[in-house]
Length: 367
Image (cartoon, rainbow, N blue to C red; front, side, top):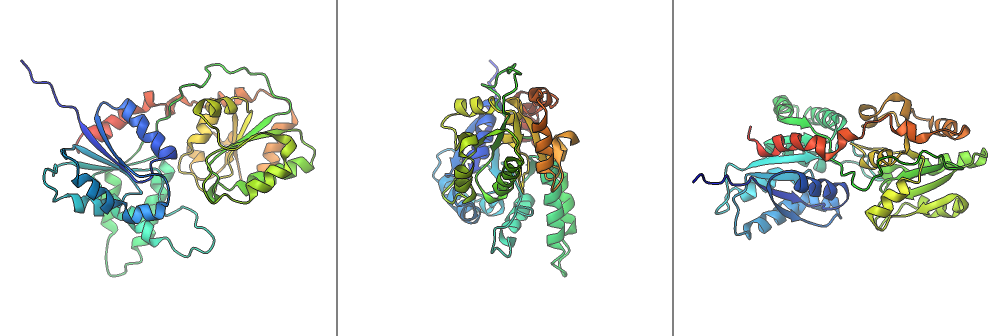
């Protein structure tokens, strides 16, 4: 009798198990034929996670009875070089285990907060993580190219250490694989009736890098010009909420349909499907799942002509710096079928059904 082949065993190491990171990993677990073991921490204090999660997870791994994994999958909040070194000598560890890192973001182009002078410590961790990993996948070409560019500028600072060859090594083991999205619950054919007035959606994290100030400044200008609109604000908030949200809630009270985090996935989708236009004002975006979800729900996008957006969307849905109010006003001037605009964008290419084969090849095959 032929012995049944053992299932591929993947150890997931994620110090920031929340938001898009959690959504991505649960989607992988559901769509990839492998046995998953999760080592995770809650999504907070990302800087401390990058600095100290590696020794913590090495201790956690040491306590596992079975350490025979075929692949370790990390995010960039793991210092993979440190983690790999710490676990190498553990009894029962599979020395031929392959280390894969998924780049949801890179620290080279992440906008610094006011008062920050340098992020070299975190960009270095990204760089050495890439060197120590056996396989790398980036969630967009923009992410990959800005990472390599950042590494190139960084290693030039070491005048007496030639590290240029490391960039070729990183590039050769890298691929771009968009994150899979679960579209369960989204209506197949949304009612194309236009809202009167149109409803604008902003559905991003309530943090400085998503630039909510520019969104509310645009709404203020449209309000002064007499345009008819309502709006929905969604997205996850944290302990330190930008003050603009509180002031905007008071300023635009009569125009608000919903303002705050949706209590359930079903409510979130339902609110998206009530909207006509989705706007991004992001200062940084390496992919942008929230925008794709809104488009899937039938919203016409209006997005910056920068970051990851030009890679993913036609020019007609993009605005240049200083054009947001003008472009948004033009969408509000004439009654139109916003859902028809949304349908011009193929969201199916971002589904797990279309992407799972690429992930299986990346995670389940050895180089």
